[in-house]
Image (cartoon, rainbow, N blue to C red):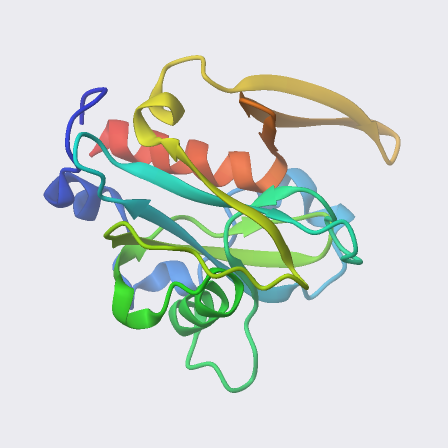
Length: 204
């Protein structure tokens, strides 16, 4: 998938775990780094990384959370949240949250596969679900989402697009990545999930 290419669905599918595959129960890829900092067992969560098939090149949909939320207020994220008891699993949870947060109903998005699970210091084990959708008009939940915006996939796949940063945390240095797009700062778990997508696409 070269910069500016249309979305290559076959390569995308090769890069991802199957929707019903072992990634749903696999250990998080960063577990060895932060397992001792996370409340055990972590809560199960899912996010939807949705690729919008624009005419010239695909984009990735992001949201900016409202400042009133108790967790991760004002941060850039993917639609998603905790896997509820009524959800059939991570895929259904990601689709439900996308519908609730930005009005991207299950009938508007085609799930393609899964990225590697990711563990957060806030106590969540996130399963990223990757899907494809046609352009749509977001309908934001004002209680959770301040803004929805898109970033060209090509910009996210550029070598060196993400800057590696460090911060003291619990007596040691924690490392994270960040990416700036206009006024938006994409960092933390959201940036790590994008980097996981990039690495898997390169290997596909």
